[in-house]
Structures are given as C-alpha cells and as structure tokens.
Length: 397
Image (cartoon, rainbow, N blue to C red; front, top):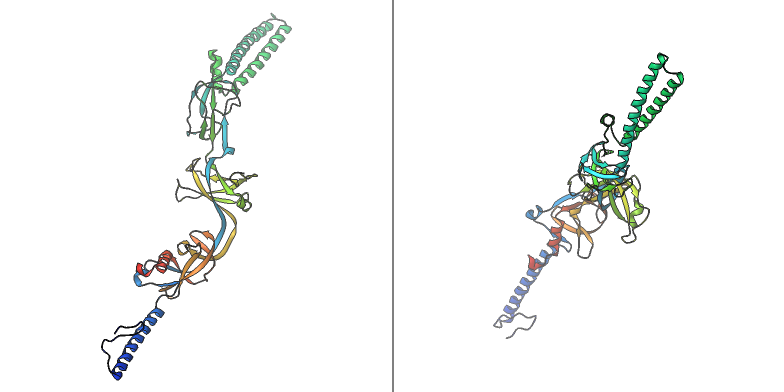
C-alpha cells in the first residue's frame, strides 16, 4: 500500500485494537519530538541576539556605558610653511656683481654672519672719496701746525692762522663724512682704518644675515648682477622657532572658527607629538573652485622638528566641552544599510543588538545620542565579531 501525504505506513495492516495502540504511540512520539524542538527554539538565540561560550567571550571586551566630556572641535588637513612675518629678504642696498657666496639653502645662520660678497661701484667710489678726504685732512693738519709755529714767532699773520684753522676744520668734516659713507656699506672701523692706511680700495661689499634663522630661499649665484629691490632677493632667512600651518576648511564650517582659538597640529613625520598653536588669520574670501576658506595658524616648534612642506593634520576647538554618553569606537558597527549598531548584555553571556546614533568623537570614543542608557553593559571591543555571528547562515556553522 502506498502512503499518501500526511499518512504513516506500517507495512501489514494490524488489528483495529493493535493498530490504534500503535498509532497513538507514534503520534505521542512525534508530539514529544515537536515539543523538544519548540523548547530548543525557545532557549536558542533570539532575532538580533547571540549567545557566546566561554572561549568566545575571550574575544570581546565589556564595559559600562559612561559619561564623557566631548570637545567641540573641527579636524582638517594642511601643510607647514615658513612664517612670512619672521622671514627676512636679504638683498643689497647697492648695485653690484656677486663675487662669492658663503651660505647654502637650509643652512642655519647667525645674525651678522656673511652670506655673500658684492663688488659694488658705489663702494669703490665711497672708499676713493675716503682716501682723498684722509689725504686732505693730513695736509691741512700739517699746514695748521706750521702756521701755528710761524705765528708763535710772528712769522705768520693772524689771518693766515685763521685760514689754516678753517681749512683744517673743513677737511676734518669731509673726512668724517667720507668715513661714515663707507661705514654705511657695512665696513668695520678696523677695515676703514686699513683702507686709509694702505690707500687701496676694497671693492668687496659683505652682505650679512640680519637675524638668526635658516636659509629658506636662495637666488644668488656668483657673477649675478643685483640691485636694491631685486626680486627674488638673493637670500631669505627664516626664523623656524615659529611656523605657519596653512589649511583649507569647508566654507560651511568657516563660521565655527574664531581668531585666537587653540590649535593642535600633528605630522606623520613626527609621530606621537602634538604641536600647539592658535589661529592667526581667517581668509576674508572663499576659494571659488574648492569652496574652502584658508586658515593660518602659528605653530611653535623651538626644537626645529617641523619642516615647511610637511603634510599636517590639525584640530581646532570651536566651543566648550559637551557632556554625553560615550562608547569606544570599536563598539560601534556600521551596517550595510548605513545604520550604526552596538551590542549590550545583562548577564555577560547573551548579547542584544541595538541601533544607535552618534555625535562627536574624542580620544577614540563616540558620543552616543540615542540607543544606550548610562551604566548599561556594552561591548567595547569585538562588536564586529558579534555582528558576523548574527549574520552567519546555518551553512556557515
């Protein structure tokens, strides 16, 4: 006999009493099995929840949800640059030809250190005038001495003596003026005396660094003709104890920034170090192509670890800290549909998924706006592991 769907076949047909008894036994067994399955289903994981064994619990961390002060701040990227307010353009006050160079790009120099020498026609003229003035002064000094001696013996008139005194005073004034003219070129007193003593001009005009710093630009080369105000200047010397950090902020966030706000700067080239600074300038215009606003911050770096051109990330505080519930970022999972979830537990064995919304972020913690309660036990590490267990199919087991 062929069994129909929903029927049970036992081979030979038994008597009515025996058949009824056998049927009852089979139905009881099936009912008992169904009850066991229902009980097993009731004790198994609920939708949106998982149960971990002792070994699996070692893969996660659990902490109570706590409050934390979240700083209001903005993050952006930028680059390190020389502070142009602390950069000196070293040029020449006179026209001439560069003879020798004593500094290279990147060299650290001190105030007064020679950078290059210039052969200047103006200096040659000034030194020639000094030599001539020194000769006239010597001549009038000797003439005055002779006239005084003669006048003492009544060999010279008073008028002659007065003229000699006048000539000597004129020569002395011309000499002082000529000496000052050479001094303007940067010649020392010893160098001026040497020129007068040797009666030879020294055409080399030494151009020195006006400040301590680093050679940040060099356009000078031997044989180059330069003149006052030439662009670019032969040398630029920058003070690197303070630098600029130039960053572009989205125009929608421009109103969040204020002059004088503190800035924390980090660079990949100097890991683990934060450089403090503050906003010095906020551009008045918006870049029409990028729709960003340039922010300029002054960064202190007395140890000289930062170099212009380095890529940097900066963080700017835009308001006082706001209190809120906090969960470690490793405890928040972004689902495939873009929603954010976290995992909570009451007995540290059964875990339930919650949808959450987040706000600010500080020091590896997300501000939880909705979805969790203070003191609630939540997974702070291994949330992705729980998510994968929940989404695993039976074939994956």
